[in-house]
Length: 234
Ligand SMILES: [Zn+2]
Image (tube, rainbow, N blue to C red; front, side, top):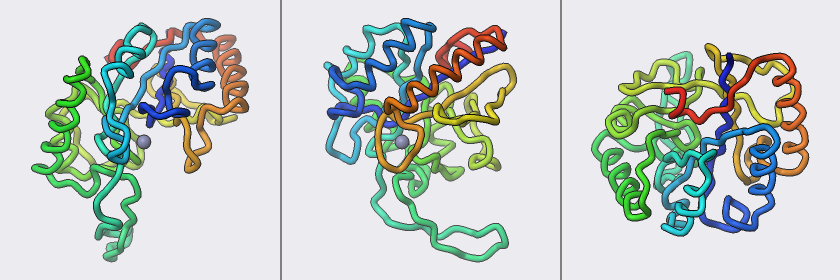
């Protein structure tokens, strides 16, 4: 038996990004009704310091037992623009931070940021068990902080090479739009996606929805599959 996980990043209370009435939600509902697909949402708790999660938003999603709400940083944004890093050949280089919130935080500030986030989650009546770093970005200190607060982290098998996690680590990054080279991690298929946005190809638009439906039909014809959330296979 194989597990199949579908992760969706960046869901937050903004029109088009995972609120009632959004077309993307209809796609997710259809996949759940047709195949029984479950979803792991990775939710920034105060996206760009503009869209704090609300009890109404959390309650809306908690009514569906096929959705797990996980943490995805607090602001999903950085204060700085770049950070000094080492290139593969040992040179000092400037690396753009982009939205890699936890790449610029050392241990103490990372703990503070997580507590700020979890306080807001708690006010909304939910304690997320899983975490994915925004933009996949962490350093060893912020990874240590994250490990202290969450049961598991969903990360990137290559980018997170060399980082030690003090909690369970799930790898996998096949996009919902991908056509080939879909791989098994152990006995689990792990699809990643974004609810919306212009930076990524794996967003929930109609084209990707129709494509992913075909991918599922194919995988179901070839494998014995059970749809799970990550906490259900932890
Ligand atoms: Zn993100």
